[in-house]
Image (cartoon, rainbow, N blue to C red; front, top):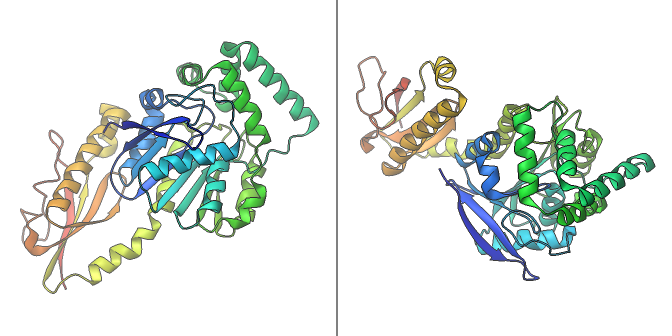
Length: 381
């Protein structure tokens, strides 16, 4: 699973780089702080997060103006300009309906876009977002000093920001974050964006957001206080708040599993009724229900390591979905290390059934580790 990188042009002529990966309904990830599509994909935690989303969605991520593979030194880093960049990405892909995932300051852009394009946005997740900063005089002094440090010495500034975004992170993760920032933006662009982020204010737009919204915020976030997330959830009409214990602003291994689970539960919850309808509307006759499960997945992960185990799971899921697509089957639910699919009896997607109702799928077994398929049973329509 590798992203495809393309470019589009914003309203003011700024070239914006975007990447696509996965299949399914579209989900546009609106970036926070500094991004770089290629460097982010090399970061294991970030890559796993995007790949988890890409298991279910056509995931679109992009480098905002002034960062990564997009045009640098453009000067205008206002929320309005960034919304036009998002519009350019959506229009380039001809997305008539999409979910949004706003990360950090990208959440303000997502809010403004959702208020402006209610018919386009189906659902929205906001992680570590503020609609307005409202810094105290002491906090403003700190922000001014940080901006001056970034502008004067980007190396020291990027490391200082890494410690703020990821307190207690490993030296390896800090090094990755520093690399992301220094490759993702120049010192001038970084300083200008830092100032623009503090001045961004979309608070008055919150009541205009009609899409179901999930606000995820870390309780001890040192960059964007938890109160800012609670404020957003309290002013968007159809919003809910999920609090994650911790102190890291940046999405990573610490708390990452909870964030990923909450995100997927929210994004996939509207598929439940559709799955039930597909079962009810099945033509008369026998319907095959199969549950696949990676047998001994915990021990397997301990033996292979998380990265290799996740890769094996992706192979398993890809094989199952390919078989379902070929035989007009439906995926009802993904259960972490397994899939619950549904198929008409005559499609031939399942084989090897025994009198006891247990069987294995001839498609759903990535070698050398063969998943155990349990609970396969038939329901007469």
